[in-house]
Image (cartoon, rainbow, N blue to C red; front, side, top):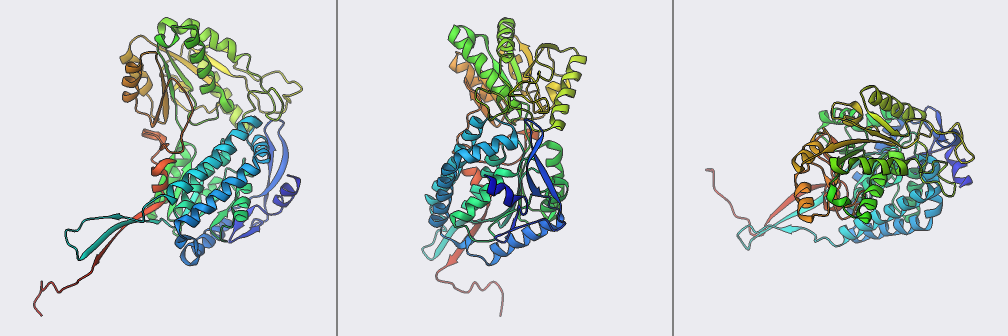
Length: 506
């Protein structure tokens, strides 16, 4: 770990197979959000560095071997990467914890999921037929539809799940035969840097994988608008995603956007009819809202609970939320880490203040915790917060907080539950809890969200597409659709016995 960090202080931009410093010479300190102390230094790239990386990716795609490498060989490389990730799981899990603030156990789980993603796309591309034959109605015509790589892909990833979100883009991009430039969040770049090292170790040709560390307003903006970039895939906030789409429009490049959500967790009274059912629904509501301090695009930040069980449910939820152990993610027994930055904590505090001003009832949390031996005063900690008596007009209910804040709304009828759950500009994910399987499926079918869990929250399958409706974005990740994002479709029509058509005199 020390050797890697020391080397990264000098050169974290990867272009054409070389590790480089920023053209400007600028650097950035990477802070551990648990104590706000720097633990690494990276190059601070800008537009010139983006140009250099795009040029390397363009050269590798137009003249390098990777786009023409057989699918079986591409799959084999992805499997080697997965094996290396498993080998380095402990180191990478720790690095993810220090970078993003999550617990080490969450970091370990992330690395396992990253390896699974690489294996999934390896298996998917290796098992594909070479093309879909189209019957042209004649034995003299051979007609086939084939898939080809898009070209140079710009991959812009968020700070909350740095390596996981990078893998959801990098693995299918490579499986399809593309080259890429990845720009991780400027505040959590460390595990993405490590992944580029593993790709090189696995034998990926120079220039296929390129990385620029730096801010979105310079590096990300240039990648989105660059005429030599054929596709841009962005995961992040709605405002930034809108700017990416606007920048990409003049060159009509493919755009995939995943822009977050404001996700309902609908609990019917019948789900709580037994002690076990009640405890499970409460436990999952805690997991939905407070995993990674709520810094999850699919977080179940809106609890929508049937009125007849609301008091009992929220009382128990608040009691248990108060007992969540906050602290440095590397400490034993810690269940929830800090927010990623001081800016993010200030944003959360502003949302809670506005909710209270608008009439919300604070059931627990709502403040910074007292410092302790596992919770330095300088860290960006915020208590898990439950806000009761919320309604749709509140900003905290409408907008994505991206912090440990759970709002509570109530309903009386199934129709009202569906209306509340769908009353959002976003449409990423949601959940339904009911002991009545028919009712649960009926409600799930009516929810306008890209993923709907029934009697569960947060699991995802590499085989299933991930994406949203509405302002949650236009892209699809994972599953066959995730691979399709990184491909173009070509129809090859071959006449085996050409004859003159004689349409014109001559």
